[in-house]
Length: 341
Image (cartoon, rainbow, N blue to C red; front, top):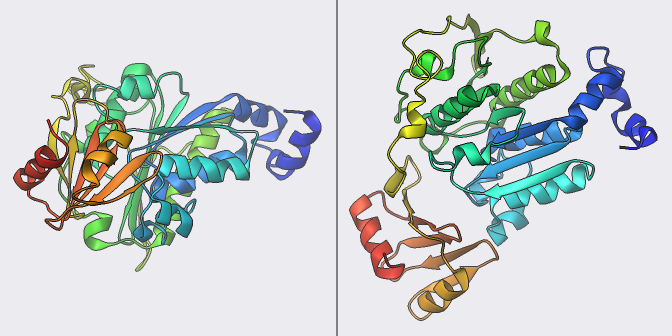
């Protein structure tokens, strides 16, 4: 960036001694990935873009709905009306916030098959996801590749965050074991926006510390906050477990898990996701479904209201959301009937 433009845009940030001009240059040279562009991810990406991170890779599988607007700060009502993919809508907004940042938007479901490719070449991974299985997958990729991983989660009025650095700290799997696929989610018990902003901001500041090399200032523990009654704990991370499959044994089990094919119920959303085996031609599918369904389409996805009452959302990468049921067998039946095997 031109030095005069840099001084103007980032003057207040460079006046902060731990960053200064040299730290700003490190930010501009960094490549950061934010996985999940929901509530946490939009706040994180906003901070990273405004701070001047050189390359920002944002990855998300979903599209904007009205229920997102209460807490997902980069989206507006037009994004919801147009059902824009979150990564695309966020890229559009971030480009208007800071045109000097290269924002790479990827509309994709992160799986064991593509996770390493999606995170190739990044300096840091920030967690904006909403489930522990994906977090454990990111954890495995990061510890295999030696990439710091900044975890965050928020639900109801409670949130947690921690920084995991390969070779220096334990990993997320040391804390969670195999993880928990159940538990409360925003779709089952709700969430208030302030806890999202607080946790994501803690993640963002740890990202800044890492990028500028302020190792001594990095937080060493798992921070847990409840902001309605206000309770806080900062628990020291345990040492790496020698028998941990990720940071101890280096087996990275999430990267060797069975493929994500078949039907998966999305907790609390009355939705089943079916991961197709091949990409979908949305124009062709629109023509196929239009005689029997009410079809809406944009360049990234197709929505079809079925005569049976359920709704299909088709993505070009082959994923299909069957909305209106949590019955996997019924979802698969509707998928086979309208999309085909």
